[in-house]
Image (tube, rainbow over all chains, first blue to last red):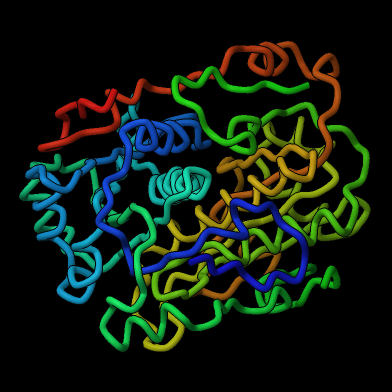
Length: 198
Length: 198
């Protein structure tokens, strides 16, 4: 199942086809695909090329996967438990060399994960990021040092069958995708003044 | 000039070709291209579909562009002053409905800008993000409300001529692109334990 957006202006196919479904197939993801997905994240830009992102990869059948699943909020666990790959996304809060606070570590980590989910589409897979997980629990389970922060979890796999979802999830899986109009988010002159580009 | 990466595993062309150069051409960017670039950001994923990102777009010749340039640190101003488009990237620190702190607003805004710079490549343009700008000054100049935060500035345009850059910038423009090996950033089992995927 594809769920392309109703975009007002043309954009590339990878971003047009990306979405965050919940109906995952249990079919395993090939190692080569996972390598490409993580390589895509690797080449993301970051302030001073710090690359503050780190990833803990869990593959179904291995203990790491069970541990990541355990950190998810109950509601997410319902659907994400089918996904063959769960990745815990972390960011480093301090700069490598000077140890100072890195104010863009979440921003930069977001970029790396965005590039990862773009490559996910290129590999014929789907990905769904969650902020609904217990970061403290993850920190304990994976012995995450104090200068790193668990930010989100991504479920990755092949698309499955929406009919297997609970009713409320199936409904949102089928709904049209929605975003704010660009006039509400793009300004010129000062904050809140709509740009005349649209 | 293209500067594709030396990737170890295959990734899609848009991400392979993306880079952050400093030699911008002064050739203006067509309105249609800007529309597509901002549309790409629009469809980024975000926690609870909050879409916390906002963009203030400056086009060379207009006052907004001058104001964004004024917020840049001197070193960035040297090269970014040629770019025909400067975009100030902001994030909303609170949730829309409940007003609670949004802990992923920078992460989500990073994703939207990552998707923007991916579409930049698709449009035959280059983009370079900077954290080196004065966020406080930007807040004053653009009357940014307290629940929003200026995070970064992106320069967008056509690629120019590296020979016009100052010597130090030209050197870094020509250098091979570098990233940490995946063994240093991708773990399994616990934090710091290299994944055997690589």
